[in-house]
Length: 158
Image (cartoon, rainbow, N blue to C red; front, side):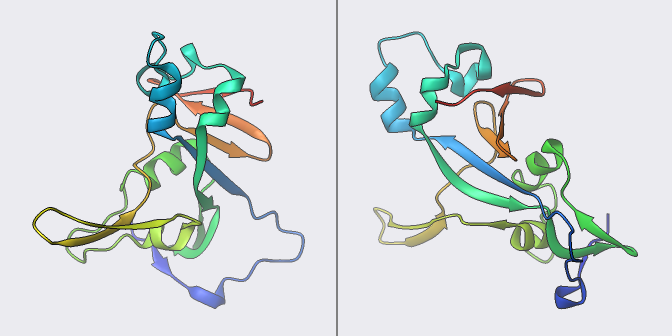
């Protein structure tokens, strides 16, 4: 798939609905403290063990914007499904030769960067989030969908 950047040449038309997907992931330390004595682990089984009150253990980690100013051929490249969000957040468009991911870079925002110093003194900066996986929640237009082993399940939040 060949995707290129058109920048300001691709403007939103008046009235065009520019969707966005908000991505939530479990704050693992808090989750483990809260549920360590229970046999409850949505990190591996998804919505099967999820309760609406569990949402308090999630944190918004990024936003995936439907339109990032990219084109595919003559058409705007738009992220328009949960499957496409999954692909973007799992590096499906990463170009190893150029060491870049223009789809991620142009569509994903609102993530935190974290800097750590390793034991050997090396300083490393990275996105403070992991790839989209089982147990993560993606919200669009007030509808919350949890990533399961196979597909997505709508969940309620408290």
